[in-house]
Length: 221
Image (cartoon, one colour):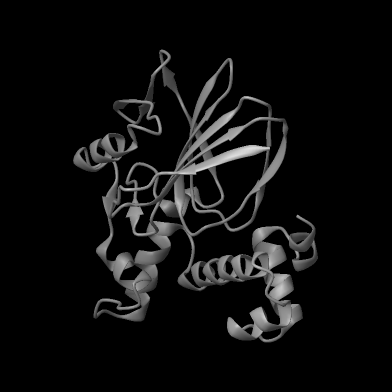
Protein backbone atom coordinates (compact mmCIF):
# COMPACT_ATOMS: atom_id res chain seq x y z
CA UNK A 1 0.00 0.00 0.00
CA UNK A 2 1.06 3.57 -0.52
CA UNK A 3 -0.27 7.05 0.23
CA UNK A 4 -0.11 9.70 -2.49
CA UNK A 5 -0.39 13.42 -1.71
CA UNK A 6 -0.45 16.12 -4.38
CA UNK A 7 0.55 19.68 -3.58
CA UNK A 8 -2.53 21.89 -3.83
CA UNK A 9 -2.95 25.63 -3.61
CA UNK A 10 0.30 26.52 -5.37
CA UNK A 11 0.77 26.99 -9.08
CA UNK A 12 3.87 27.70 -11.12
CA UNK A 13 4.51 28.54 -14.78
CA UNK A 14 7.33 25.98 -14.64
CA UNK A 15 5.91 23.08 -12.61
CA UNK A 16 3.09 20.78 -13.71
CA UNK A 17 2.67 18.83 -10.46
CA UNK A 18 4.29 17.98 -7.13
CA UNK A 19 3.58 14.55 -5.66
CA UNK A 20 4.70 12.88 -2.44
CA UNK A 21 4.32 9.12 -2.20
CA UNK A 22 4.84 7.20 1.05
CA UNK A 23 4.99 3.41 1.03
CA UNK A 24 3.61 1.32 3.89
CA UNK A 25 4.74 -1.98 2.39
CA UNK A 26 7.34 -3.14 -0.11
CA UNK A 27 6.63 -3.80 -3.78
CA UNK A 28 7.09 -2.29 -7.21
CA UNK A 29 5.33 0.29 -9.35
CA UNK A 30 5.46 1.57 -12.90
CA UNK A 31 6.62 5.16 -13.29
CA UNK A 32 4.87 6.16 -16.51
CA UNK A 33 5.62 8.92 -19.03
CA UNK A 34 3.68 12.12 -18.38
CA UNK A 35 5.18 14.65 -20.80
CA UNK A 36 7.31 16.20 -18.05
CA UNK A 37 10.87 15.99 -16.76
CA UNK A 38 11.50 15.71 -13.04
CA UNK A 39 13.58 16.36 -9.99
CA UNK A 40 12.93 13.37 -7.73
CA UNK A 41 13.99 12.88 -4.12
CA UNK A 42 14.02 9.28 -2.87
CA UNK A 43 14.19 8.86 0.90
CA UNK A 44 14.42 5.75 3.03
CA UNK A 45 15.57 5.04 6.56
CA UNK A 46 19.25 5.27 5.66
CA UNK A 47 19.75 7.41 2.57
CA UNK A 48 18.49 10.28 0.45
CA UNK A 49 18.96 10.31 -3.32
CA UNK A 50 18.35 13.31 -5.60
CA UNK A 51 17.69 12.36 -9.20
CA UNK A 52 17.27 14.55 -12.28
CA UNK A 53 15.34 12.71 -14.96
CA UNK A 54 14.69 13.67 -18.55
CA UNK A 55 11.39 13.23 -20.32
CA UNK A 56 10.63 9.52 -20.60
CA UNK A 57 8.97 7.68 -23.47
CA UNK A 58 8.41 4.29 -21.81
CA UNK A 59 7.39 3.09 -18.36
CA UNK A 60 10.11 2.29 -15.81
CA UNK A 61 9.61 -0.15 -12.92
CA UNK A 62 10.66 1.13 -9.49
CA UNK A 63 11.11 -1.20 -6.52
CA UNK A 64 10.38 0.19 -3.06
CA UNK A 65 10.45 -0.91 0.57
CA UNK A 66 8.20 -0.14 3.51
CA UNK A 67 8.91 3.35 4.82
CA UNK A 68 10.31 4.70 1.55
CA UNK A 69 9.19 8.13 0.34
CA UNK A 70 9.32 9.73 -3.10
CA UNK A 71 8.96 13.47 -3.70
CA UNK A 72 8.52 14.13 -7.43
CA UNK A 73 8.61 17.63 -8.90
CA UNK A 74 7.34 17.39 -12.48
CA UNK A 75 8.45 20.29 -14.66
CA UNK A 76 6.43 21.40 -17.68
CA UNK A 77 7.66 20.58 -21.18
CA UNK A 78 8.43 24.25 -21.85
CA UNK A 79 10.80 24.47 -18.87
CA UNK A 80 14.39 23.44 -19.36
CA UNK A 81 17.69 23.23 -17.54
CA UNK A 82 20.52 24.65 -19.69
CA UNK A 83 23.07 22.60 -17.76
CA UNK A 84 21.22 19.37 -18.58
CA UNK A 85 19.16 20.06 -21.73
CA UNK A 86 16.26 17.87 -22.73
CA UNK A 87 17.92 16.64 -25.91
CA UNK A 88 20.64 14.96 -23.79
CA UNK A 89 18.32 13.74 -21.03
CA UNK A 90 15.66 11.78 -22.93
CA UNK A 91 14.99 8.52 -21.05
CA UNK A 92 17.96 9.29 -18.79
CA UNK A 93 18.40 9.82 -15.07
CA UNK A 94 21.37 11.45 -13.32
CA UNK A 95 22.00 11.09 -9.59
CA UNK A 96 23.15 14.45 -8.23
CA UNK A 97 25.95 14.48 -5.62
CA UNK A 98 25.02 15.17 -2.01
CA UNK A 99 26.74 17.76 0.15
CA UNK A 100 26.17 16.68 3.73
CA UNK A 101 22.71 15.45 4.72
CA UNK A 102 20.47 18.22 3.43
CA UNK A 103 22.12 19.72 0.35
CA UNK A 104 23.15 18.64 -3.13
CA UNK A 105 25.27 19.97 -5.95
CA UNK A 106 23.92 20.94 -9.35
CA UNK A 107 26.71 22.23 -11.56
CA UNK A 108 28.35 25.10 -9.67
CA UNK A 109 25.37 25.55 -7.34
CA UNK A 110 24.75 23.95 -3.95
CA UNK A 111 21.04 23.68 -3.16
CA UNK A 112 18.99 22.55 -0.18
CA UNK A 113 17.15 19.29 -0.75
CA UNK A 114 13.48 20.30 -0.91
CA UNK A 115 10.70 18.82 1.18
CA UNK A 116 7.00 18.73 0.34
CA UNK A 117 6.59 21.97 2.31
CA UNK A 118 9.49 23.86 0.69
CA UNK A 119 9.01 23.00 -2.98
CA UNK A 120 7.79 26.47 -3.91
CA UNK A 121 10.91 28.11 -2.46
CA UNK A 122 13.13 25.52 -4.12
CA UNK A 123 11.60 26.09 -7.55
CA UNK A 124 11.77 29.85 -7.03
CA UNK A 125 15.52 29.60 -6.39
CA UNK A 126 16.02 27.47 -9.51
CA UNK A 127 14.28 30.11 -11.60
CA UNK A 128 15.95 33.13 -9.99
CA UNK A 129 19.36 31.52 -10.47
CA UNK A 130 18.53 30.69 -14.13
CA UNK A 131 19.09 27.00 -13.37
CA UNK A 132 15.63 26.47 -14.84
CA UNK A 133 14.36 28.66 -17.67
CA UNK A 134 11.26 28.84 -19.84
CA UNK A 135 11.14 28.35 -23.60
CA UNK A 136 8.26 30.51 -24.82
CA UNK A 137 8.35 28.87 -28.24
CA UNK A 138 7.73 25.43 -26.74
CA UNK A 139 5.07 26.88 -24.44
CA UNK A 140 3.27 28.28 -27.48
CA UNK A 141 3.40 24.90 -29.24
CA UNK A 142 2.03 23.02 -26.23
CA UNK A 143 -0.76 25.57 -25.83
CA UNK A 144 -1.86 24.94 -29.40
CA UNK A 145 -0.99 28.47 -30.55
CA UNK A 146 2.55 28.21 -31.97
CA UNK A 147 4.53 31.36 -32.63
CA UNK A 148 4.84 32.56 -36.19
CA UNK A 149 7.98 30.84 -37.45
CA UNK A 150 8.89 27.99 -39.75
CA UNK A 151 7.83 24.44 -38.90
CA UNK A 152 11.47 23.42 -38.91
CA UNK A 153 12.38 26.07 -36.33
CA UNK A 154 9.44 25.10 -34.11
CA UNK A 155 10.45 21.44 -34.24
CA UNK A 156 14.08 22.28 -33.48
CA UNK A 157 13.08 24.25 -30.38
CA UNK A 158 10.80 21.46 -29.21
CA UNK A 159 13.35 18.69 -29.65
CA UNK A 160 16.21 20.62 -28.03
CA UNK A 161 14.11 21.62 -25.02
CA UNK A 162 12.15 18.44 -24.37
CA UNK A 163 14.30 15.73 -25.93
CA UNK A 164 11.37 14.38 -27.96
CA UNK A 165 9.62 15.40 -31.15
CA UNK A 166 6.23 17.05 -30.92
CA UNK A 167 4.71 13.93 -32.49
CA UNK A 168 6.13 11.76 -29.71
CA UNK A 169 4.92 14.27 -27.12
CA UNK A 170 1.35 14.11 -28.46
CA UNK A 171 1.50 10.30 -28.50
CA UNK A 172 2.40 10.36 -24.80
CA UNK A 173 -0.44 12.80 -24.09
CA UNK A 174 -2.93 10.61 -25.95
CA UNK A 175 -1.75 7.47 -24.14
CA UNK A 176 -2.20 9.31 -20.82
CA UNK A 177 -5.78 10.23 -21.73
CA UNK A 178 -6.51 6.68 -22.89
CA UNK A 179 -5.16 5.25 -19.65
CA UNK A 180 -7.26 7.65 -17.57
CA UNK A 181 -10.44 6.78 -19.46
CA UNK A 182 -9.75 3.05 -19.27
CA UNK A 183 -9.16 3.32 -15.53
CA UNK A 184 -12.60 4.93 -15.26
CA UNK A 185 -14.07 1.78 -16.80
CA UNK A 186 -14.76 3.11 -20.30
CA UNK A 187 -14.86 0.36 -22.97
CA UNK A 188 -11.61 0.13 -24.91
CA UNK A 189 -13.38 0.45 -28.28
CA UNK A 190 -15.08 3.68 -27.17
CA UNK A 191 -11.81 5.14 -25.87
CA UNK A 192 -10.01 4.30 -29.12
CA UNK A 193 -12.71 6.05 -31.15
CA UNK A 194 -12.90 9.10 -28.87
CA UNK A 195 -9.15 9.71 -29.00
CA UNK A 196 -8.75 9.19 -32.73
CA UNK A 197 -6.81 5.92 -32.78
CA UNK A 198 -7.11 3.99 -36.04
CA UNK A 199 -8.78 1.14 -34.16
CA UNK A 200 -8.78 -0.62 -30.79
CA UNK A 201 -5.68 -2.78 -31.52
CA UNK A 202 -3.77 0.38 -32.47
CA UNK A 203 -4.66 1.97 -29.12
CA UNK A 204 -3.74 -1.17 -27.20
CA UNK A 205 -0.32 -1.34 -28.89
CA UNK A 206 0.36 2.36 -28.27
CA UNK A 207 -0.70 2.33 -24.61
CA UNK A 208 1.31 -0.85 -23.98
CA UNK A 209 4.45 0.58 -25.64
CA UNK A 210 4.30 3.91 -23.76
CA UNK A 211 2.57 3.14 -20.46
CA UNK A 212 3.61 -0.49 -20.06
CA UNK A 213 0.09 -1.84 -19.48
CA UNK A 214 -2.81 -3.22 -21.51
CA UNK A 215 -6.53 -2.54 -20.98
CA UNK A 216 -6.86 -6.05 -19.52
CA UNK A 217 -4.16 -5.34 -16.93
CA UNK A 218 -5.83 -2.04 -16.04
CA UNK A 219 -9.06 -3.90 -15.39
CA UNK A 220 -7.27 -6.27 -12.98
CA UNK A 221 -5.41 -3.54 -11.10
